[in-house]
Image 1 (cartoon, helix red, strand yellow):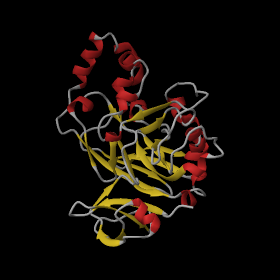
Image 2: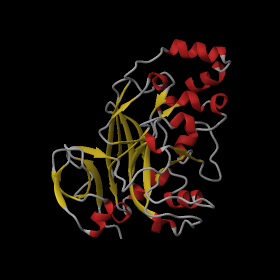
Image 3: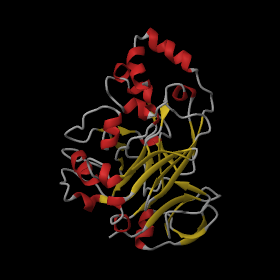
Image 4: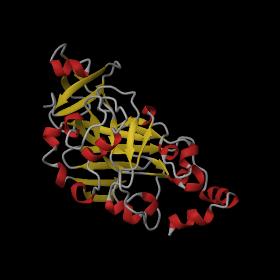
Length: 307
């Protein structure tokens, strides 16, 4: 049984970082709450204080572990990408520096802005303790809670000729894994999960909309079990479980992120993850990118993505 319903990690005006058990999925900036210096203090109910929420942080007891990601985990996304569903969950990681929080402005460098930045709304779970070689049936014992994520990606670097089919480089950039706003305990989210809807909006326009339980291929329990085979998964590891149809690269016409775009990923029972992207260094033109592709003899492969 979790010691929280809606775990919120936040920062105060003086820079202190604290934890609180929120009353809902909507922690409000400026709200005075009962707070604890560490997650362990919250669990033990000790060293409580009162503090005002100034800024949301990733809702994790601690950071530093690699972020795990899953690909092709929704039938609708496999269909739009014209790819076969694999026998096991495709898994890769992002570094911990990719973490960002809800309401945070995501700075996109000129390098990333010029290489087809895209969105991926995702269900996320966080491990509660270290695990290895667990079964799907054992997995619920190792899941601390659920939240929302956005697996931001630079699609250019997913081209096989660029990264040999590896996804890490395209997705590992700083702040490319915003999660939040809160971590919801399995006891609260469990009953809603099968029928929970995932909706991604760009500037208020719906781009992704699915029922998770009907579209997802490998549930969180299967994902965690697969990850843990002969591999030690640390406590408080973030796992992004894949995205449904509706990513920008497969929109018709193609739509990628632009400077100032507001991204909202909403999952019923978990709240809404909100971020704005800023191209602080500008962006190279698509003409320059096209010429780069022509010189590298990759235009034909890239053009297939634009159909």
